[in-house]
Image (cartoon, rainbow, N blue to C red):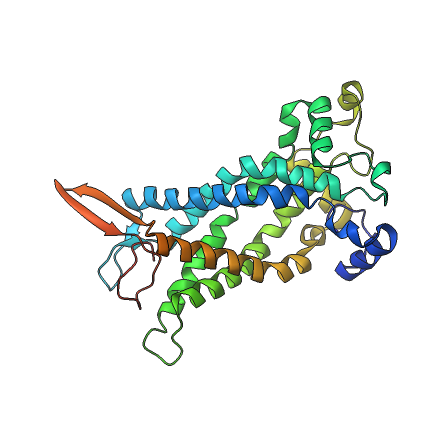
Length: 306
């Protein structure tokens, strides 16, 4: 939807019907291999770096003292940790998303008729024509898009604090349920803000679509004068207006809640089970052991990150 010419599709259902009609049911899984293999790495880098950035910010004073008396990261600090984690993951995510975009834009029904036969062939051709740096085409768009993890993790934390207020009432919910609901609801905040940057990123990666990808470096010199982030944004405004930035928002919303709710439920639960948010530091020559558990204040212990 995002990279097709204006007027090609009337909506998500129109895309679905036309893809199945013209390319077959299996076309819905074009470009599935790169994310299926790569998203484990992307999310590992994202969430692993998120944890370490939280530790760093906590140790460097971006904290507040809530009524409970236990220091915790501020909401803004949670957002900053998400921002830095998003930037870190962009180095891994960009090549994977580039291959996915290139493969999905091929409309030929037969694999033999497609320019790229698969993810490995796609990567090989990009490297041959553009060099190894070609795999990071659209990197600035990826950085801008992933900057919005600031809003995801800030809103996730705000929602968790909101659910903790229910402690002791008839509406009290478990920490796991709060993780699940907060992750799903935070994803709506994330996509509402991130979708314009996602459109820019994907169009940068799609270039030179709808023209065929060059097969030789000499052709690339003429064709692959890749548009910058600003140039791509301007093209969207000129051709489609502001609405062009919100292409594909509906499908993103449909998948956002279950995907992100499940991911954050598993991540937060795993961190609690492993006791991964425990650390020791020295304060005024006294060794202090502090819990950084993501558990909320209605559990037997309190959170430093809450």
